[in-house]
Image (cartoon, rainbow over all chains, first blue to last red):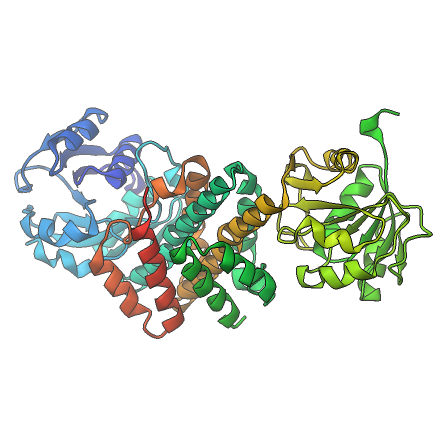
Length: 264
Length: 264
C-alpha cells in the first residue's frame, strides 16, 4: 500500500451539514467513519445510518476507540466548550473544520495533535456537491500531522492548501462578503421583484453574467450601475422608491457610497 | 414572407456596449442596421465598420432615412437631452434601451411611436454573449408598436416580456442590488484576499455554489454565516479586523443588521 492509498479511521464530533458531506466523501474514498457524536442523538443516528461502519456515540471520550483522526464539525460558538470535553489517546489528530477559529483553540484537547481541516464551501444536506472541486485548507503545528491530513484531504479534493490561522481568518471574512452578504442582496432583489409581481427568474441571466465577469476580471474594474456612473437622478429615484424600506434604503446608500469611494 | 420573418431597417443612437451587442445580434438575425449616431465619431465609425450596411451619421435628423426603428442606447443621464434633438418621419418607432427611464420620456420626439426595448443584461464590448438567453423587456402605448417590437425582439431572444414603466423601474432597482452591489462585494472580498496574499480563485467555488443555491431556493431561506447565526464572537472579530477600513466596517455592520432584521 502506497502512502496515497492510506485509509484512516475517523470519528466526527457534530453531525450537521459539514459532517454530513465530509463523512460521505471519506467513506466514498475508502476511509472508515467509525463514530459520530452529536448533542442531538437523532442527527448522529441519521448520519450513522447512511454510513456502513459508523456508530452514533454519546460520549466525547475517544480514548478507547481506534480512531486516527477526529473531526470537529460544530458551530463556531460551541467549539471551545466541546473541545474542552474531548478525551483522546495520545497522538490522535484532532482537527476542527472552522474558517474563523484559530488552531490553538484545540490546545484544550489534552494529548491531541491539533489541526484544522476547513472545507471552503457552503453545505446543505439536501444539495449534493462535488467535493473534488472544493478547496480544503489545512493547518497543523506538527509537520507529520500536516502530512497525514494532506493525504486525507487529497483523497477527497484536488484543491488542498496549507493556510495559517491568520490568513484563514481573513479568508473567512472575505467569504462573508462574497457569499453571505451577496446571498442577502440576492434575497433583497427577489423581494423587490415579488413586490412588482415580476418573475424572479428574470434576473438570473444577469446575476450569472455578473458573477462570470467578476471571476474573470477584477470586480472593481468591471463595476457598472448608477453608483459608479455617479448618476444622481437614478440614485435619488431608487432611494425614493425604497422609502417604505428604510433599512434597504440605508443599505443602498452605504453600498453606493462604498462603490464611489473605491479606488480602482 | 411570414410576419416572424419580417426584417427591419434600424438606426442606433449611441454606439456603446448595448448598441454594440444589439446591432450585431440584429444583423445576425437578418435585419439591416443602416445608421449609427454617436457623440464620438470614432465609436460610431468603429461599430459601423463591423456591420455590412451601417453608416456613421452625425445628425439626429432621421426624417430622410428609411428606418423603421430607431434604438436609443445612451447613458440614462443623456437620454432626455438626446430625445429632445431627434427628428423622425411620422410613425417611426423610437425605443430607448434603459431600465430606469419611463416610456413617456420619448414623448419629446415629435411624431414618433415611443417604446422601450430593454435588454436585461450587463454588456461589455470585450465579452461575447448569447443574446438568446437575455430577457428583453418591451413597452409601448400603441398595440401595433408593441407587436412590431415583439417580432424584432423574438428574432434575437427567446425571453421577451411586456413590462410597464413602473415594474421596469422596480426591476432595475432589484438589478442594482443583485448585480451592481453584488459585484462590489465580490471586489471587497478580492481585496481582503489580496491583503492576506491568498489566491483570489480560492473563493470561486464558494461564490458559484452560493449563486446556484440562491437561484434554486429563496435566498433569505438559505442564508448562512455569522449574522444569521447571531454569532457575536465572530462578528466582533470581523469588525475588529476591518478597523483599518472604516467604510467596509460600516458596510459589514449594516449588512449584518439587515440579515438579522429580515423576516423569513
